Image 1 (cartoon, rainbow, N blue to C red):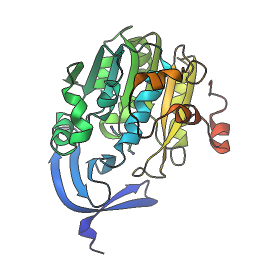
Image 2: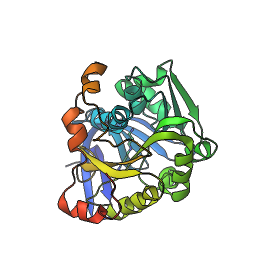
Image 3: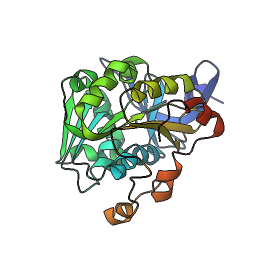
Length: 285
Ligand code: SPD
């Protein structure tokens, strides 16, 4: 095996995942991180920030359908949506499939990520040119600190809690998110994996438990994140993701899905026993 043709994501110094690639399509150091896109053998173009896999052409639909459609089909009328991060454009693309959305604001700190994805992840980044999208290159944490009673749904489409994303996992950030949401608002955030990062998840759950009525995590499969089972944090001021979910709205929307459906929406909140026990004191779904 020629190691030069392989990219390895190392995880916690105990584990590594390797992907064979044909060539490097993009490689630049931005003000915030290194941004790379590799043309892989099995997964198409792969976006890697600071040596952490963000998304690939092959499996991005799973992450982006699940981060967006679960909250947008839980909230009965999500008109004003904010995305923090999400530079590859996949989250914006899925938000803008919802006909009741009147405006989607996206705050991405790093314009180099957007540039790389516009060039090499075209199917993912297509949402970035939608007329209802207001894309700003700013610090998401600083932006949210200035907002009040403004959004129906906030999506935190971030990397792991290191580098520029670390601040998006803190107490102060969630206090600001709570204030920026309208009185029936929902936040969903990139929530790591219960198999490797349950302590981070418990800390996040504690943070939102102090602020929101209904809090928990839901799971999805991912081919290119360690463990293959990854989660989103769900926190809502009013709506319950299962009791208030109107599954007939999914068919009525006319949206074509590849992963999300009415059954997955509900089943994704079921947790294996060890995770249930770890979350129990803080879980309110
Ligand atoms: N371990 C990697 C987690 C990265 C999650 N963010 C991906 C961004 C996709 N829009």
